[in-house]
Amino acid sequence: MTTPPAVSPSPLPPVPSRQPRRPRTRRAWIVGAVAALVLVLVAGAAVWWLNRDGDDSPLAGRPRVTDDSAGLSYAIPEGWKSNDGKDLIQAFTSSITTKDSGGRGGAAVLAGRGRGIEEPDLKRRTETAARSNAEFFYPDGKSTVEESRATTVSGHPAYTVALSVRDDSGRAGRMRLTIVTRGGDRSAFLLGVTESPEPGDNEVVDAVLASAATE
Image 1 (cartoon, helix red, strand yellow):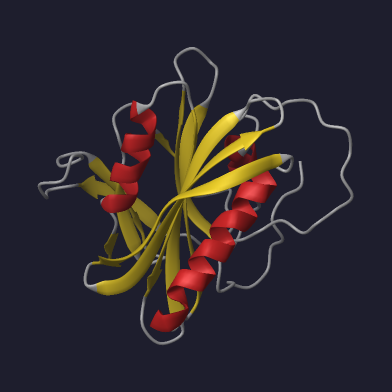
Image 2: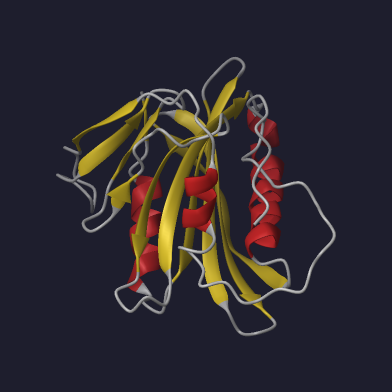
């Protein structure tokens, strides 16, 4: 599986370079896609640790990943596993994953950092990055925008886009990307990816991204 290039922090979430397509077997998804992506990343400089979410969000009281490199923290839902921080390239700085109990899918949230983005450019940059990631995970699929709106993270301007994706075989998933400006020459992002027969899993991923706070 093609992995993102290990380059200096980009202004958008990392997108794999294009290569000629080969005949594909259908991947088991999150373990075969996002989890594999995380596991093959080479060592980076993330500094993160766990603390407790003490707000009134749906994930209040849950442990949190504090990602010092991205400048973000976010909640860990029950049953999810956090990456140990040792296998991440520069673009990705922390992650959490889960597997569906039936082995038919799962979900992941990946965090990272990038160059600064002006607030007027947030919508365009976020939508472009979301579609590019959808094309990577579903190269033969079609994505549909479910939601595209401005938001804030700890008072910082941000933008979030949710896409539903389905390929020719009927394999379906959902992605949500939130990019937040960090002032000056910095930005950060959370990318949530779900392929699960359980509709509630999408809500859990949305709750993780909604729990984000700047550090």
